[in-house]
Length: 638
Image (cartoon, rainbow, N blue to C red):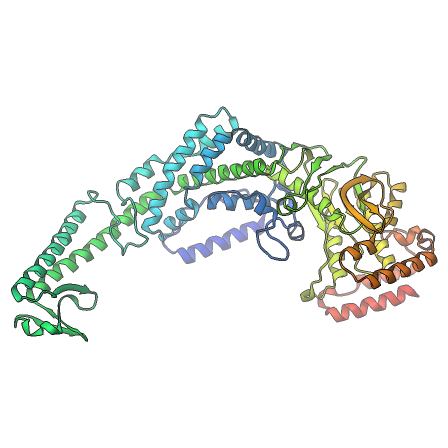
């Protein structure tokens, strides 16, 4: 059953996979480990959009590892470790005990630099055992693969010896799982040459002394080649042709080659075989007889080596489960060493992990930005968020001040902690979260007929439907893809909804009016990323402080971006006139308008709701959808 009871979809998927393997592997079905059911509820859930927005495995623009979180913490030295680290990142833990178990192991390696160095020096020598054992199990292994297994076992034994000396229950468990594979080592060591070739067609593969029949055939070929050399010397002396030589190719076999300048010296017993531009090639009955002996022996050697190699491969394959288990342990040790190395190099701290709701980061930093920006010091920030008093942090401040970096670094610190990594901070205490959501950036999806604003709303809707009180939500500039009042109304209502839902939220916005929310919603707290004004200039301090920002400094940021002076001057005049004529937003927009989720609907709203519910969205084109939206807006205006 493999734990798949009441999971018909999983049983079907497993059946399809097994049928495919039976169809493609025929008689060479490899030994399989029992399937493991991954329930997303057992792990921190991160949707594809969030993985992309936070640039966890690869960057958004370059689609490369460089510049992503993975590039900062991936210091693995084995292919298995590299793959496992990605798996840990894709499936962070939510069990505090399991997280702390990983953290304790990483901590030991951070404190014992000598052990970490010794382990890593062995890890870097270990080949990709996981892939090799798959090739061995599917009868596609090369001689060099068996040599790699043999060599890997040497380093596995070294690692096991290092772990056995530790007074650590965490590493004692790993050491116990790590098989020394002595028998596998002996099987390969006594049979396969020290430096095996990549192909059976490139002998030798099997060691001297392993098989008597093979040794006898090799002696025959060696003696025959000696006979060929002696024949060449003998023919030179008998004919007086100093430039005579005996060669071999796959088409004509062995031949005697004589330059055309010496053709008159060739004896009548030579049989002409091939004419070249500057030479002639001949054979003799004795040479042909010896060729048959040599070629026959070489074919027999190939067939015998192939048969012996297959026998050895099967013996190793029979131990594939043990080898695979040791490969899994090596991968885990490699990842733990990688996280310890990253923690040491980047000055990370061990977080305290618990099941409480609070997240406290003291002097936290963005792990990627601090590693790539070298021309200025990264400004660390304290972040405290919980489910009781500081549940939704509403963060205002000008563009370029660091709001986006701040909220992203909080999410990355939580993610790092829940994979078992140290975090970039002076100290950290993290209550386990079940999901991380982000709504950041601006992009359209033309293939789905979605504008930038539609993409923003679809992503926001997904968050509102799926977040729980244990989730962490990161929102950056909600509502900027539409008109000011529409955008502000949506942002206001989204903030209210998340506050009432109870999930921890970092909400960066340029709508300063949203600061009013804290008056009615006691778990919303206002913060801003402060700047210092100096005449007409501003200096970004990158520091998070309590309170709402006074204004957005948009024109000042535009000037810093290089907008021409005449445009800046004109913008200041326009801004002055707008402020002069602007009515009080609070009086022009009622509370009902600002709340999208108002439960009290009038008759018109009921009619509109019914009409919307009747729309067949699955069969509408993007143009039909836009037309329908225009009709609904017109009715709403009436």
